[in-house]
Amino acid sequence: MIFDGKSLEGWEYDPVYWRIEKGILIGEVTSSTPLKRNSFIIKKGLVTRDFDLKVEYRVSSYGNSGINYRSESIDSLPYAMRGYQADIDGQNNYTGQNYEERGRTTLAYRGQKVTVNSQDASALLKDNIKNNAWTKTVVTGSLGTADSLKGAIRNEDWNEYHLIIKGNRLLHYINGVLMSDVTDNDTANRKFSRSLGVQVHVGPPMKIEYRNFRIKELW
Image (cartoon, rainbow, N blue to C red):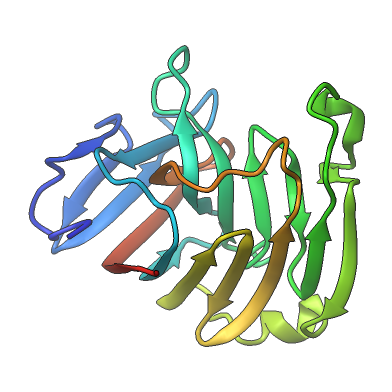
């Protein structure tokens, strides 16, 4: 079990920003507790490889969060992660996209089916990032326009995020609708296993709530 709704035992987190109320995991940034950088609550001892994850979330109108998977903690930065992220924001500009935190940045926008090309291991990440997006990608199909898919997401209400992650195929669904589809062929930068965590983001005061985490391994 990832989260039992009663205790944060087994999680690594900053208690200034994370708590439980009525069985719900809450991340909150207030005007008196601003963030200097993004902060995560990280599930200790859970390695996400090939898996199927469903979780319900609710985010405030100007909130910003995300579910990180196959991600690594950064020893020099407490509560920081690097890796794949299923993006969430209250304005639903980014919700559903695939973003790599502290890495290749945007891999697929909402509505895109994308193949990420192989990358020279000696190349610097920053040389292939433009406008906060990874340039070594090819859009191979459309899942619908970003605006049409946005209509499937409920504002300031509960939504279900569903991740199907197997091998180098990364599928992000919200409320049963496929939002982004990434095939990651970048052998220099892709990951097949690492940790799971969820985020509170730098910016204005915000609140993110999570409940009913369900995960199963895929074989």
